[in-house]
Image 1: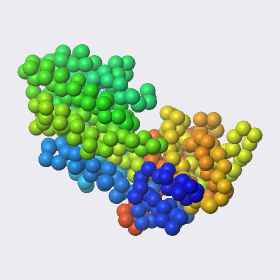
Image 2: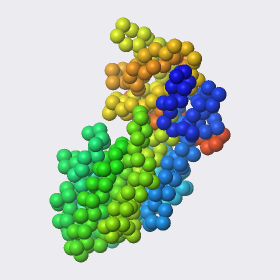
Image 3: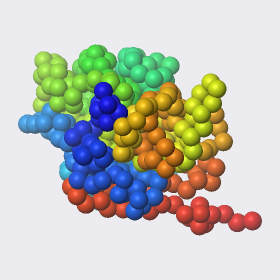
Image 4: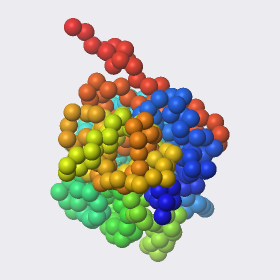
Length: 428
Ligand SMILES: *Cc1c(COP(=O)(O)O)cnc(C)c1O
């Protein structure tokens, strides 16, 4: 294979992000031109790729009552939120800050679901005043506090309990959330008692049940097992006289970073809906909270080669993006494909692609076959989810700029952070 053919084979988001005439294109726009105009590191998102990922879920739910709440922690940039909100999505939030972003993006408050194990009273109050659709509650003390806060406002908070089905999502331990040892959710065995407790509290209105078993799930079986476990609970809860209006099945569907083959969203939901139908819950309102699978492969991060540093044991390719921009390799040893923006038809060498941050953990890719020269642009693929939203100012590096591409138009949706932006809140 030629270097171009090799690079093309590594691209996880074709046809939206693909080569044309030896140049990496995001939809109809040249990546090299974007980098020239806006500098690097630079995140670029394809709107068509985002809507295509969403369409797979929408097809899967055709003819059903279902609300797709984009889990905005994956990428909470306003233009990304706006794109999904305009396409009909609700939003899954995990903090007061995300609530404000969600409202700013124009979401209908009734389509907002509030998840997370540590909601504060202030966050609860603000969310109640905004009129969000549901609180996904994760513990008994949270039920008590939420009831108190809601009663204090003369309201009843709509709640769903996040239950922990105790299934192994077969993913990285840091992003597995559905096992007994996790901090998330209410244990399967305690769920019925928790529901009875919730139903008796004056400030709550029980509306649903929720589960979320982990992230980057690439197999179907954990979902099917979790669905059975959740429906067992629904049977028991409803037998005790509590009605559940909706079933929220969380998010977690994986994407192709490096040859993974997760089920397509519509194929997965065909199986899950068959199970719901078989167990008599086919007409129940469904909520889901996908994050990564809607945005992960819609984005790339463009970065420029600063220096080549060949060595005795390893060759280092030093780029201008780093762990503060792309934290997943450092955090989870995650793999992102890294491809040249304009592949050279010369011999490749093996490189560790690293950033300038003063940490040995600051690497973006290990042992990659690349033909590069200083100044060459590279694209870090699958950078739409859990990159910009996890970015930091470590080493006093400003956050990257972000562009949203729609056809042959690219719009700057977040300016590059300046040193003044970084210093604004400080004083000596
Ligand atoms: C993170 C999270 C999601 C989204 O997970 P993805 O793997 O990005 O789809 C959904 N629900 C909850 C409660 C989460 O914490």
